[in-house]
Amino acid sequence: MDEVPPRKTKTITDQAAENITRVEELAYELKVDVVMSRDAKEASPNMKMGEVLDIFRQARISGAPVISQDELVGIISIEDIIRCLRQNDLDSPVSAYMSTKLFTVRQTDPVVEALKTLVHTKVGRLPVVDDTGKLVGIITKGDINRGLLKALQHDYQEEEIRRYRASHLFEDIVSGRTSLILRYVIKPRDFTHGGSASSYIKRALLRLGASPQIARRCGIAVYEAEMNLIIHADHGGIIRVEIEPHQITIEATDDGPGIQDVELAMKPGFSTATEEVREQGFGAGMGLVNIARCVNEMKLDSTLGKGTRLKIKIFLEAQEAFGEVSAFQKERT
Amino acid sequence: MTLQEIIDQLDLTVLTHPKDFTEMTPSSGYCSDLLSCVMAGSKHGGIWVTLQAHNNIVAVAALLDLCAIIVTESAVPEPATIAKANEEGVTILATPEPNFVTAGKLWELGLRGE
Image (cartoon, rainbow over all chains, first blue to last red; front, side, top):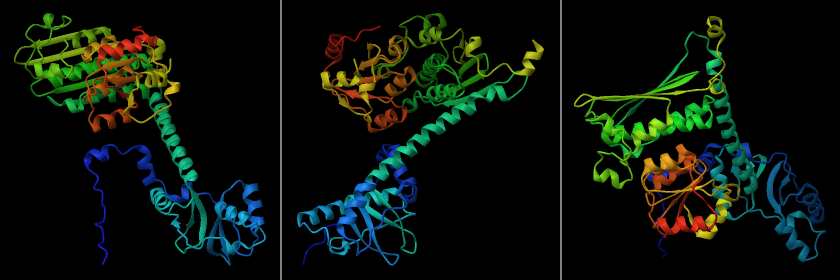
């Protein structure tokens, strides 16, 4: 007796799960009926192969379902026509050449099911059926590619819309002083998430309509402040960003250990980072210097044993300001 | 010079999702293993040569809008780092050559610091 090989199952590890791309995600999210071709050209079992050839040529398709009395009975493809041409047999009926071994997919299935079937059976197209088994369309790898690309494009447009909405925030809200406050808790020694607060802040600024230069300057300043909290602060700290139409204020605070000599800490190349941290490329002694370079105002207060508070400001030129100055503010100036 | 030409000439391995590298033209080059120095010295749209391969290189490249990172001496980033790079749209390339040789080759191809 033949031994049945153990079924190969693949467990997705957390690591692998992180590697799943947006395209793969979409293959699970999108349903077959979203990407399939409707109104597929149909053939009948009694049609001559020559006629099918003409249909394929005119419609520029390479396969069609064969329908008899509203029932799906087979599928005819360009390969079948080639076989037929070899025999010089174009007057034969479709029924002589069609394949009747049918692999179908349901319209409510995720696209990934259609992909699996296409790969396993090596067929070029799958008839799509509804719950009653009635043909509703045809799906090919080309349809799937187009569908995925369209969905990706849609994702991109959604980001554009988000940006558009966010960029109107400051115009739409009328107050004497509108500001948006973002707050991030930074954990000590959390190098894995190092740079995430700064990435989020940069993205938020871009969505709000900040210029790439402003977003980059802010990103760099916050990154250095964030890494300082990760590397040095006993219990990590808090980054608070206040966005106003004309300025961005960033505060990074922690509760220790504090800086012994603030002036020395500001010197390029001075660092108290451990050897281990330096090996990772941190602790170049350039963090505070970089922050100073990127911002318009910088204030560093520190008490040894108590903690450190860094407050920085980036001013926006009139043409860079978020939104237009609201009517209320105009009235008062 | 396009990023594709650089990848071909330096025989670099593309670790992140492929993009149309023929459409990407790096503005300049920068070489350092100290992240804050890169923050200070690398121009946006540039290529960064480093032997650091941990996940913070992605944050640095994303914040600076770098064109690509070349990780040297066959250093291998963690899968999570590659995933993060794909998410942020950062391109990571790899080479067995050291920083010095890589920077030298880029210079020969006409890439400059400014």
